[in-house]
Amino acid sequence: MGATAHSAITGSAVERSTIRKVSIRLVPFVALMFFVNYLDRTAVSFAEPNGMGQDLALTAAQFGFASGVFFIGYIILEVPSNMALHKFGARRWLARIMVSWGIVALLFTWVQNSEQLYTLRFLLGVAEAGFFPGAILFLSQWVPSRHRTKVLGLFYLAQPLTTVIGAPLAGWFINQHGLFGLEGWRVMFLGVSIPAILLGVIAWFYLIDKPADAKWLTPAEKDWLTTELAAENAGKTGADEKTSHGKAALKSAFTNSRVWTLALIYFGFIYGLYALAFFLPTIINGFQEQFGTTFSVMDKAYITAIPYLPAAVVLYFWSRHATRHGVRTWHIAGPAVVGGVSIPLALYMGSPAATVAVITVTACAIFAALPVFWSVPSQFLTGAAAAAGIALINTAGNVAGFAAGYVTGWLKDFSGDYYLPLFLVGAFMLMSAALMLWLANRSRGRGADQGRPLAEVR
Image (tube, rainbow, N blue to C red; front, side):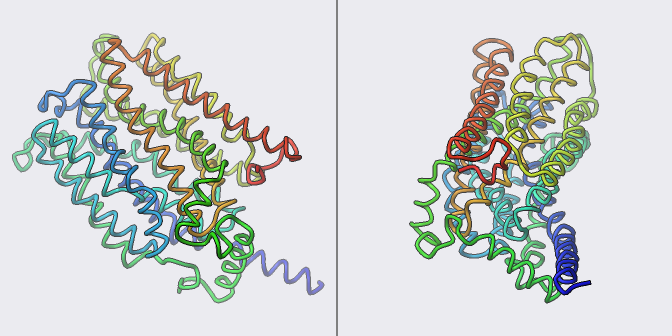
């Protein structure tokens, strides 16, 4: 065996062991943080049909506003928070975020009226600002681009599993009505908030900011990973001295047309995601009137979880396919079309089972595309420009989160049913598909081949 072949085999072994260690050591913990993050921000959707809406006398529009006002605080501090994470390091900043939002989430236990609910939801957004784009940025800094879709796919499993596990967990807490003299929905807020504080404290000691400081990597693994990442980052926006920090990094991200296009694509997906997350429990609660069926609190919790287990399975295999074959336009545009067409169809089903089945297709479509989507920005952005660009894209998602909650509730009150708001969801997802195809056509117009990966779209 020649020296070159031996070096290639050795390098391949180091690569496999390094990615395996990163996947085992970091991804599950950050995914657990994401699990608690998503559970805390969507806990209000479980509380509303199980006593909170009645106790606080909330209309659909008021609940929609309470669901969406979270994103106003998040939007205001999204980019500054991610820039702070880049400056101070993920370990300190992500730990600080978790403890902050855990304290605010705990206060929901004692909310007394709609005004207090609005205030706490706004403050929760302020406290959580920067967590998700910070987690995406953090994981992207630990793996080369060819492994990023797989790693982000494993991380993203936490989001659908939040509902698979979190909905029955929330139902269990709600059934503890009377514990500490609290209504069941208040017990639920108490139970889901404490883990955030505990995980934040643990994160301070557990996370590591960069591969060079990882004691659990061998010297050969550290060298391989730092060399790969440095070579990959060379030439990206944010890699040169002029765009590596401060205002220049912000300008380079905010003037990049690909960043803005991806932000609009993400808007469509997240509009659909949060319309489902906030209103699916309420829609299921309406099955009794619509179909004459009766479900217990736990029944409704399990029904809410149904669409998300297949979504987690589809997410896993879809991201694996993208990793093996390269990220293509249809990995993102295809699910957008499926989701855009399927969500309005749910309104025309003749039974709870058929309705949930169609909603499951929508959930699978949304979650299949998201981890693949997030592998794209870090392939042309790095450093502070990546921090700003990823935060900007996620800000568009948070605008969608606010709009999905408020507009869906307002349109439901206005029209008397969910037909109009869910058709709007479908329209936004089809917009995402159209923009993804436009981005690919733009690349081909510059001389790219039709089958080129999205990483090469200019």
